[in-house]
Image (cartoon, rainbow, N blue to C red; front, side):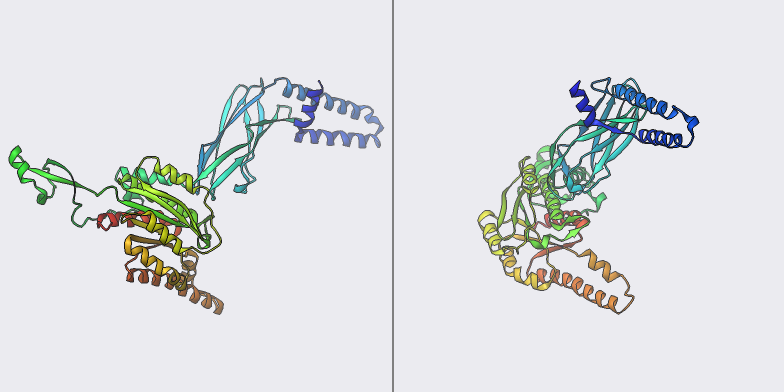
Length: 448
């Protein structure tokens, strides 16, 4: 009995109708001082209220397990995407109940509106779905799910606690990764902005000899096979495979800049995984290097199915640093790790020409031995300023400075091309498409 009283003391909360009833009784007691004819009516009302509260408690605590709840969490969350979660709840009471649900989501979301109010008939169940969009990678801790149950009387509410603490990892955007992979496999990637690249000539990697069908290149006719079979036969060629593609991700302070809640580092990590996945689909080998003031993670290129999982596991905890990139360490690491000519896709950022010139000698050294593709970001806020008409002298000054910085970004592309270094200048939200387009163009032109 003592335990039940303790539980009632902890898990019972007054409902709104209880406050209304108490206020009504208080008014009756106040009026009884002025109107003696009310007699014992206030005491009768108070006694009735106490009896109703006791009845409500009996209804709520008459069943040991009146409510069952289960929260469905994915094994991992996708960074920057809307992830669907759901709560399954079932009513074991013999009467309909009003339900209030509070889900204690991780503090990283900074949301206080995960509160659901619903009605649940007797012996029925319901599933409530909602979405969460993380903008940082790492470990997220979910708390308890607290459920508040009201009987039809609605005087008090009983609290139930479910689930308890659970940690879920937030990985780089694997939802985008799946989308691009499916598009690449089904040859529908042009639907999401990825261009079909016209090939110059064809790859010289032989695949098979097959029967001629209308549309085949007549220059690939195999005359010996044709003579033996008595019908036209052609040589079939395929893309060169097992080429090495390395994504190098800069984690220095230049990647801290935010865009739509995510840092440039998050966009670079998402794009590197998407690009690596497309490379694996094309039977190339994908590898990874991260760098800041020191070399971080190094994953040698491979095309095994588990390679992408290894990359995601390495990247989900990566954070931006506060020092400049050590380009000399990066150059030495690339020279020691990459034993043959590879496509090196370097995700970084430059805001001024002087910043590029500091790193240019090392970029030229890397480009001497490998095919270097430098990916950096267009400042969309500056672009907005340049396109907005100036309303006063201050606006003209701000617009002039913005145009100067925007022009410097274009000069960087020309400066890199002058030294034989390819580049991609992209807004963060279009990074995936622009990087894949450039990779497919490089494959089509057989530059690796």
